[in-house]
Length: 555
Image 1 (cartoon, rainbow, N blue to C red):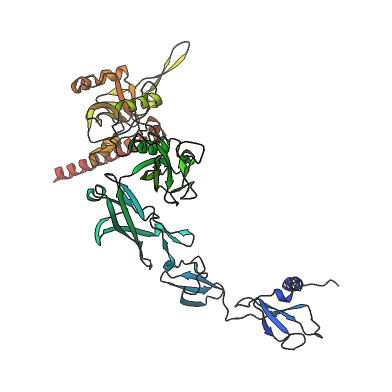
Image 2: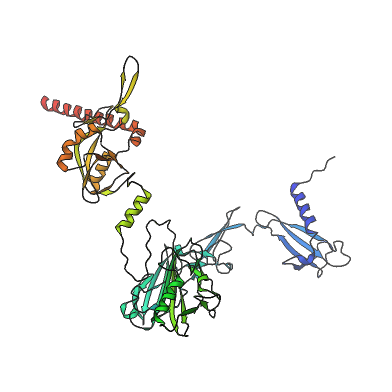
């Protein structure tokens, strides 16, 4: 006779065999207990392998070390009965600092209870997954001392890229960040940047500012406002200034290489400024960085503030120092001291602007800092000739605030403009545009109007424009036109438009075509339905009018 083994018992047997292979010393959470085999206490430990709950039995593991016990050296697994008081709760955050639980099997409820005591190291409640917003951290400007070049009218203080984090999670988007700037206890500005006044950047000295940042939770969630204060020291003096511009996707920039934006590499900028002030008896020698700033914006490949980086020679060259852009846009600043061969020192600051990558640039200008830049029309003309030889436009669109309708129409559907000519030898399919000044709304013929459209420069152009855009213009006073193109005017089209061309002094060869024939043909059924509906409504109105007239006449 075959033995039938219950699946649950078979699983329990497999668990027993696995557990007997583990030594008693390896059990965690073991407590003293009475041995279920020999009945003695003081020799046996018990570990809960699986706690019984409201819908499942549990398992306890016993290990006895008493000599003479039949289970000596072997673990005993004992099944425990269902515990109706131990529920399998699913907890939900109540958004008020507490959570509540409901058993997924019998609907029992618990709570609300505070998250306190259940937060892990990352500030997350292990029961419901809620964040401990009292542990939110805020990143403030890494640079607390800001060197400003005397007379630099573009000088400003920046709060930088402020982030709010909880553990490793960035939760900045859940808050509204406000920045307030104070000088000598008096608020002088608000916002993420503060342009320094002329009274500061035009006078050498040290100025002390306070930046107060408050992050207010968005929405109606019950969270604390996070507030931090940062003390910033501004040092205004004659400085050797150098700068570069990179993007967040650029590779490392060597200070001896051009950045594609600035007129000269960083090392050449510093060398030229030191050379201009050191006199004929000396020459620029080297620089030494006063600090080693690093952060989300980027970092320099400088490992010590005592290392000299030379302009010339075989020793550590300034040209070989590299800046590694980070993934965050902003300004990287590092103060340095430059020296000439006579031992005289010059304070300086290096500013590298990291921009968010925005695609390939079309027209690029490079200019020294704090100088006026004049844009040249010829540069943009050269660009146009380069990307579009011959200077032709494929498609254009613009917004207009003036559209004038003309008594000049053309059939909308090109299929309606085809006819067949048969001869003895062959059949010819001919396409001929149909124009008129007196359109008739028929079931198989729908016309579209011509318009005068005002260009951005104030002039007008003849346009074959979808009537729907004229309706939009009348409703709003202006309209963004669809994509269109400049095409050669047809001979018979010019014939019908001749009066308007001469009256308004328009181009007699070109017309702006802004009607999508393909889209009209795709909606052929709807376009056929519209005139049918108009004809039906018109007939209905005439019939109703006739009935009214007859009733009035009958009286």
